[in-house]
Image (tube, rainbow, N blue to C red; front, side, top):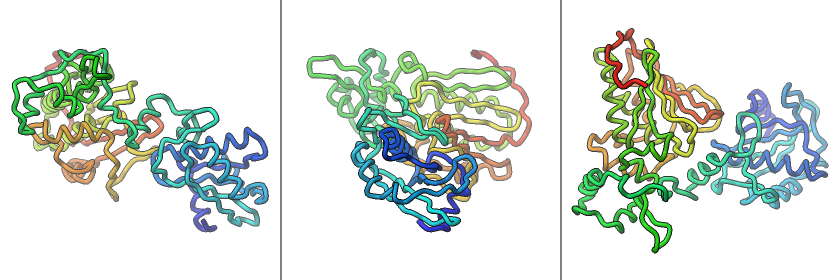
Length: 389
């Protein structure tokens, strides 16, 4: 860390990966706890390396400076090592700035998330520019994103096998060149579609099995739906992932009356929303809002921490949130809509050339990812409003 890089950081606002601190009193238990919380929160938040800058007033960014003797690297490393599980990789630098000394704690990107505080067992994350205790769904998401838990293969003990569409399962087996009138429970279990807690218990669908092959997953997973808002009315779509994709795509084609509209690109955005949404966020579903000017697809599951509107100077290539679902949809979907690689930002943008700009909005503070697609021409209202809720 040098003076020039430090000045660049000071030009930025506080966020999930940047925190300004006047000081920590490391001679007290509360000061050690505050330091540990902030380091854990930055390490657990999405993105690359982060920074805690000591000796800066957080609101005004006024350089206050610190006394280096009060903050040795050995002391800070020892606090983090003894209080974080697993320990967070950090480094400590001291930089001269405006005649004063500023401390910089670099929190490196961790491959061992999530981290928790040993003393109280809590997991912390950055919520915008503040440090907060992670909610249950956020903790589960951290475990899933880092390969410590596969949400899709969690067994639903309150759901019976009769809730699975075995006709759809047989079709899936045919794509795998497995032909059987009655797929064995062992094969279904090996594929993660069903499971049992012990050898003496009955089989039950997994969450992923219900999302792919369920007759009506929303009966047990009420946040699994797509809501389309058009002309002030809302239509709700339920079912397994492919059924929702088919039904929503057909409905969008029926209400958007623009010649030459790139429906394939729209369908790709909807497919991405369904397969990559954060199914651990049970507070909301996918919402598509259609206006005269654009289509907004709002999807639970931010790509990264922070709030951003993405241009297309770069492509975003995040890790896939639900790899188990994605891998099975590659072969399950007869229309091969999940075969395209990546999130496809550039591909979608290219499809709308001459129609209007495409925007991708990441809202980390609300765990949302929004896509705004232009319509290009004013829509004429359709008279079909049957089934509206």
